[in-house]
Length: 156
Image (cartoon, rainbow, N blue to C red; front, side):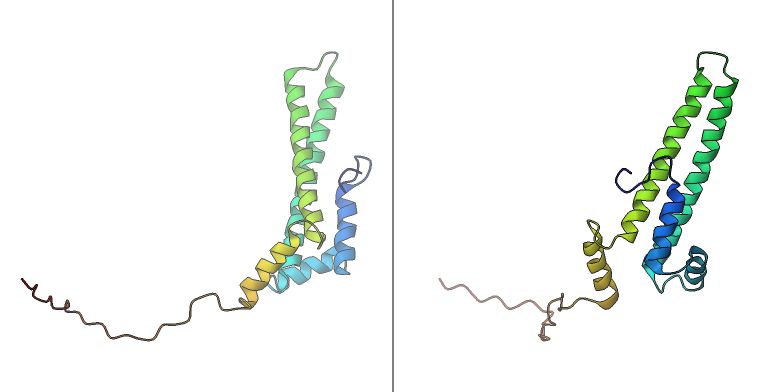
């Protein structure tokens, strides 16, 4: 396992789905239903469901890219041609996207992850307002004359 992402032998989506379910204490289908019914009640859950969906989508793209690459490699009589190398690059890109989404999901599930506490503090101030007054107190009204002040005569 590298940085919390399972090796190729493990199912990344399955492992992270288990983490999501353990984190929220419910099956993923129940969590999706709850988020769909009230997406603003728990923004953290909404983000997790969204990123889990993006992870599943990325895994699906990766699976198709791997299947295409394997089919091309099986059809190759010898040296790998440029189209097959293109498929290999497509697999590499799909792995990078899938792993990046997995990292975001892991970060969302870890309350002690770097930056999470600062993010929670910002969210709290946005929703609850600042703990102390952040604007200057109102100044007392002062009557201003619209006419310029008279100029005195200079003495000679």
